[in-house]
Image (tube, rainbow, N blue to C red):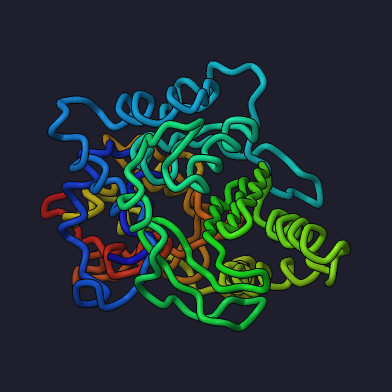
Length: 368
């Protein structure tokens, strides 16, 4: 599956069961095991399958098998538990140069892959388990041969942006052969306002995890690399902050280009048809039904279960409108383009932000 498979449905408010059911409507990006693509809902499906024999849900099994034995008392796979903490982080992005808590996120549908809330103290215990090859405080909590399989490089996913050496992915871990030996690594970035990174060097029984509640800037990666420099050489060898900021700027460039395209309307836009030409229901198997309605401000696009997500549409040019989705790159407008049929009425709509693999094209529902 493509790396974003299912993430868009989560953002629209669909349940885990509904999202996993709808993955069948997406096209594979390669033949089986022939290529690499990160997949939150692929991992989630694996977790759901793994716990099925227990008769329990993933969240309960994760707590029973991992968090409690490690004493990770501030860690949970449930968003409700995170919200109970008075001392918790909010997701921040830059708005007019100021770090601002802009978006709230409920990751419960993909909790096995990206929905754990924790803190540095608890994650230190998890790092001890990993570096101990499944042993913690003298007890073998995970069979050594089982956890070892997760650290085996399986697929090459390109070159490390810093060292230029091949970078591999295993079963949930990135496996790199870096400046200071083999590194088990992973990083997460939800661009609504968080960035995390963990690096483990098994030969030295050494690890670092960095958690941030800010839109990705590369600073967590820079802190991890600076730490490793200090341990192995006694000094920081490079300006890691500048280097990692440049890497993230290049990764986020597509969103910036989109903002430039749709951020400024054309000087002489072609007028839209009467708004009634666009009003109606549009549908496909993956996204379900999208409804375009007319209100006192113009057009609005309603998505998700029972249209719970509503976005104002702003006219851009002829049959193209824009809106601001709750996307990985915040504050970037996206296009909604209507195809007009012979009766001068929209016959389909393409929602660009949801169209990574053609799933954002929806046909008008007859009679609506």
